[in-house]
Image 1 (cartoon, rainbow, N blue to C red):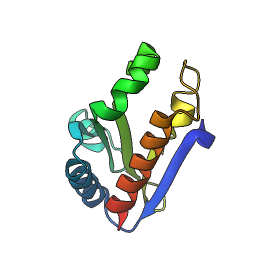
Image 2 (cartoon, one colour; image 1 turned 90 degrees about the vertical axis):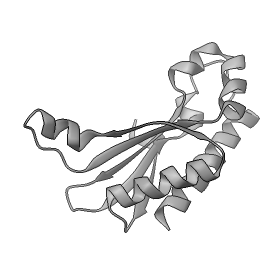
Image 3 (cartoon, helix red, strand yellow; image 1 turned 90 degrees about the horizontal axis):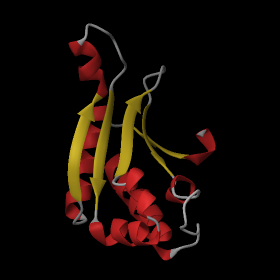
Image 4 (cartoon, rainbow, N blue to C red; image 1 turned 120 degrees about the vertical axis):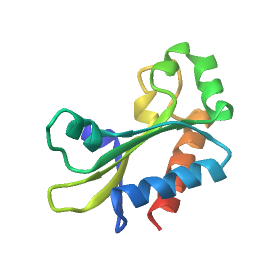
Length: 130
């Protein structure tokens, strides 16, 4: 699975990177559905976890064509990006490459919708890390 993951390094904190990503998603006209703070969830059950947050977002203009090609794409959509701090304190944004994520479905890896999702994720994560 590690080969399917795209990682983008940032000098921001997890919260700062997620704030920037959330703003970039909104500026791109997409919808943020949820922001999950995994570390806060762990703390609520008296456990420790390095800082990690997940942003779940989408745009029907991108997701609908994928689901028209194969309704099972709805299992993988909306898109998700995780920001986390590794053991060395380095913060990363990570997401699954849409070509790999949708690869087992009736959606060719070179389908225009896959390329659009890849481009969107790349632009959004770059905007969030700069």
